[in-house]
Length: 313
Picture 1 (cartoon, rainbow, N blue to C red):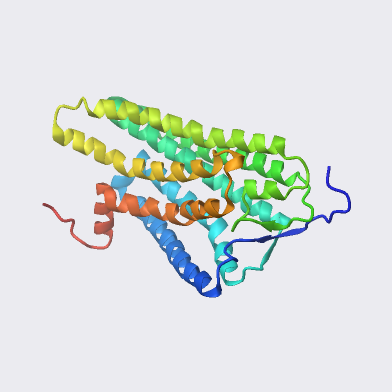
Picture 2 (tube, helix red, strand yellow):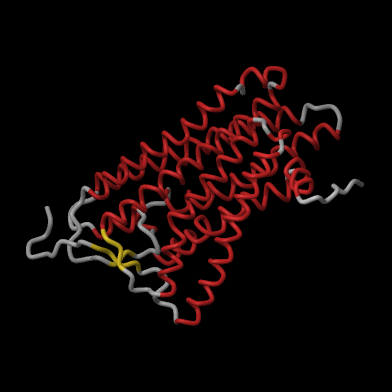
């Protein structure tokens, strides 16, 4: 039950980066705005290239374009308000706005996790069962995997938002973060949050440990299959098709796991905020950068689109 003689909170303030001076915040604003614009541009380029180049109309790049779209909406849900908070640290957000931000953040964040898992499954089929690849990864299967990822994101987001905003918020109104996230909001509730903490942990396990486990198992089988390939050139080509995806997976799941799977007793708002900057600002940029620099097909399609002849050695 809410505490007696407490005031019901109608809006929140983000603590964000308010502890830093104006000059530091301005520096952060310039850096984060630059990274944000590069993320939007990079993901737009990835989606456009895949759409225009018919050689990229295969499941792997279908999932990549969907991941780019999802990452774009994910950053839109967080970064614009964070940038506004750097210029004006005392902007308020009402409960409805906070719930909306949390909903879209969770929906697209969880969608990203399962899209990466679908991409891992695609690589598994392509390398371990190449003769049946076109049969297994047909159009219907791709649509089911993509819509299933989004469906899981939507359902988990509804569960989390309902759980958090079903709580009463009294007196405390400063969120120790730069956006509305589950754990900082639970700390502001003026009632016992044990059940909500359990729900949050179960959801975190379902959307992080389960996909991570599936990707890990896929890559154990993939690597063992690649090592059986007789020619060195064949092994190199097979590894190259997985390198970009594996790089993104490690960074994405690594940062998210540090935040959401560690015990409550080890919470440190300052460190959590720093790690959150990594997976809300930097990680979304890595998707287009990694796939543009490390993926031969995407590089060639990009060079073709801008009229540059691919280099051959």
